[in-house]
Image (tube, helix red, strand yellow):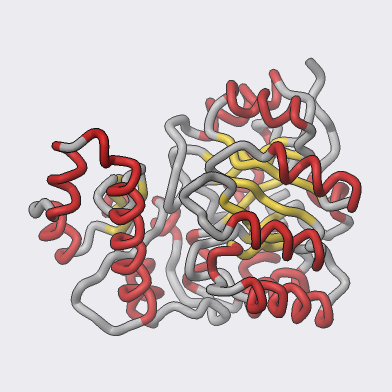
Length: 318
C-alpha cells in the first residue's frame, strides 16, 4: 500500500509540518496564537473548557486573531459526558480540524466531512489505524511510548514505519520530540509531520505554574514514570518525592476497583476525576503535592522560552 506523500504543512497550508499538541489543562488560546504566528498549527482539548459557550468563545477568539488553521481535540468515548454538546459546538464554529481520542471517530467523521473539517485520529497500533482509515480519517496521529500523558505501547521507530507502510493516509509522529534532530528523524521514518507537547509546557505562553515549568528543567528522562494510579490508564508523570509517596499508598477507590468488577465502570470514572483534580491543583498552584504530567523529552528542556522561538527551532529540523 502506498502511503500519502502529503505532509502536514501541505495539507494545512502552513510553514512547518508541526502541531503543538493539545494538552489537557495546559493548552490555551495564547499558545495557539503563538504557534500560528510562528508558522505551525496547534490544538486545544475541548475538555479544557467547562462549558460549550467558553469553548465556542475560544474558537472565535483564535479565528478573529488569525486565518491560519488550528484544531480542537475531542474525547469521543463515554468517559466524556460532554461529547455530544462539544461536537455540536465544533460543527457550528468549525475549527479547521478535529483530533479524536479514546473511541470511535465514526460520528465525527460523518458530520465533519460535509463541512470541510478535517479529522485526525490518535492511534497507538496498526489495527486501530486501519479502522479509522476505513471510516474516512484524514490523518493518523501515531501516539508512541515516548508521548507525554496518555501514551501508546510502541516506540516511534516501530509504530511510525508500520503505519506508513500499511496505511495510505498521512501519519503524524507524536512522542519524544524535543529537538530539530528528532523532527528530522520523524521525517526519515516516513512521518508527514510531528505532534509535540511536553517541551511546550516550559514556554512563556503556557499557563502552568513556574514550579511546573522549572520541573521540566530540573528533572530528566530517567525521572519519568508510567502509572495507572491517576486515571485508570497508563499516564506518564514526573517521579517527584510526593508522587513516590503517593505510589506507596492505595486509595479507597483503588481498593474497591480491584475487588468489585461489577462497579469498575463507575469507579474508573471517579478515579479519573480524582486523579485529574490532583493534576490540576499541581499544575496551577504552588504546592508540595506535585503531580506533573510530562514525557521523557524533558531531558532536553534547558530553559523557559517563547513558544514561537521553539517552534521555529524545531521546524528547521524538517
